[in-house]
Image 1 (tube, rainbow, N blue to C red):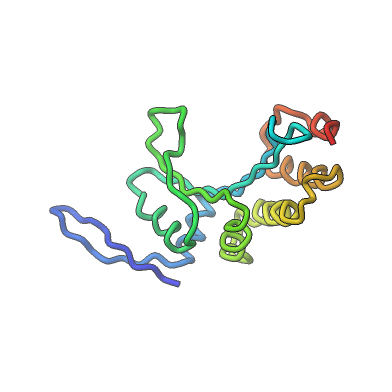
Image 2 (cartoon, one colour):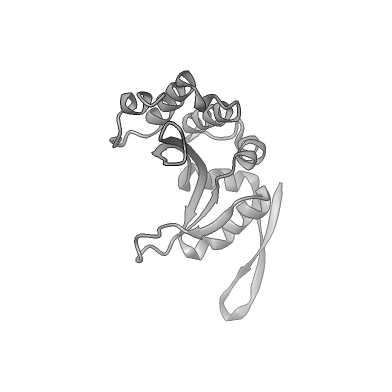
Length: 167
């Protein structure tokens, strides 16, 4: 699918440009992320909650691309990328809700990513497990933790074993 956009040129003139699905997919390869995290929560029996989202960020000058993501996928929202860093003027397109992740984001990217294919496959598996409510079981949360902790090499604040004790 190709999406027409209006681009502002100097002196107030505009030009029509096309943004294809391939362009959006390539954009995500560089600027997107499929995130899975397990965070403390006072609202759950175990004290832990699985969070998940798709995000693509861009300098504010590229807001039009983020708007095309939102329009093409018919879901999500655009917000400031950082609420803590006032010098960060970048924006982010985000999809957090399970139905849209499952029914729109995953099908859109299925078999199309190269650089982020590994993270996408793990993300897809976690979304499947959460959809099946397996995150409420010790076996399910263990699988989710293993997938989530393998997606990012940053040092984790909480060890998997500590979270598993709550299940």
